Length: 288
Image (cartoon, rainbow, N blue to C red; front, side, top):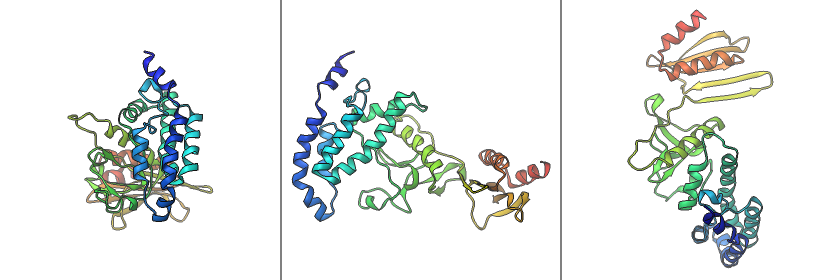
């Protein structure tokens, strides 16, 4: 009813942040000199519930406004730049979730926002994994996850940093550094994080899709192929730089590359998803 909203409106988030900042300032120079992470400051931010402060009150959060959130970051920045930077990395992801919630985006952001409010979950986005050395996670050309994107109990990875066995390609380890995958994988990772204990999570099994527009040329690639795969140009020609080439491995269609033939490329993406054979792809090309 009004209990949660009342609790949120009586919290002076700016004053609470100023109190923390005064403490953080006493260690800021030491952290800068030693190049160490502000772990103790992060613990105090969590204890004070600053990670969930902007989460809407109706979802269990602190209900801080966007303007208040910005002032909280500025206050931290004046005291300890390292703490403010680390906190802001969480904050911009959090504000994106809040925007999605307020605009009824699909998939809904409410479950993750409620989890942040309940457990003070910290959101992290990075393309690198070197800072995770010594964390206990398996690092091998990225953060190694299982087929559901779980890197360790309660920890998921997504985007450029994640390397996982893709069931669509018989468990081949993949690390896809492109924004299309980052967006889709981020949704899958959030869903994995929210799976109740005892329920079976859904594996992340996409057909990779990468595109680039270079002047008047549209380049698209689907699937996951290698230099030693079978390859055949099935539409257009290399000379006119308008073509589609398909790739096969062990008799299965595993990829397609197209220059300025987008509709045909996407047909092969569906065939890869259906685990079509390489011969099926060639037959379809001959018939079209």
